[in-house]
Image (cartoon, rainbow over all chains, first blue to last red; front, side, top):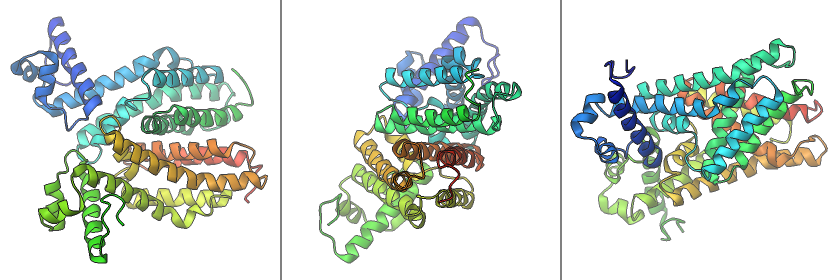
Length: 206
Length: 206
């Protein structure tokens, strides 16, 4: 059952719905939420208006689906690494993935979640809370690895704080990398927190 | 001479221009850049259209003036502290100011510069470069203190990297504080980098 519409969809319906959300996500990413109209989404997908409104009552429903979609996309991209954040080696490999991804994107776009959050935080409380929920899922995934390190006795710091520090470094690094069109802010932001974590892990690679 | 219009303004003209920019900055901060029209700015200031267009040829010129205005405002707020970022005590006092400011704002608004950057980065290269220039002024101010610490032998790390790490932590912390309506992300982001700097300063308070 679709979480947003509350309607049970056929496989074909689910595919159409997903195609609409993907097109809306791409448009909002490229031109911003305010500048993206339901008509833009209709044209981009080649769907009819009645099809679009069958799945999404209004732009707000579509925006909430886009926030979910981008949260899944961000977590999927990192999925192979998120289970290995319990060693310094695993953390550094995750950092490399994030930096390489920005190089591939030529430092464009920033964080797909953070960008949606920044655009909606003061004008759309429902969207802000959806972004907050996406951030929490991401933070929890990072925290799991650090908590394992801590419980093994390989980390003396507070794993909750260090997980949040990694995510804030990532968010600030992505924003400044986007603005400067240069990966150095992201590299330095993550490396500084990772160096700090390494200093609290007694030089262990495990 | 006004940097943006290239016109030499009287004191009264400068005051009117500043009033227009302040109103535009407030509107863009509250409702976003795209949603803010020249007519909104006119209504907010009580000026006539011809007055507005006397100072700003178009919305783009006004936006660039708003980016300058917000950069000055951010640096002015921190000015009493920026000359004292060459000790751990001074850095912690600056951190406290930034956290207190977010509490005062009830965690609303995020970073006035970062928010403008996030909204324009992919659609307005001129605005993106103006934000990048604002970030560099801020980063330079932070770097000056850390470079002094380093040259006194009170910091073993790379002051350029640590200054950038502090600004990325601040940007990520402000964004997540805005989304969660809670100062903890900002506190943890700054404290983590400051703890790292303290660990590289041999425990010196100087």
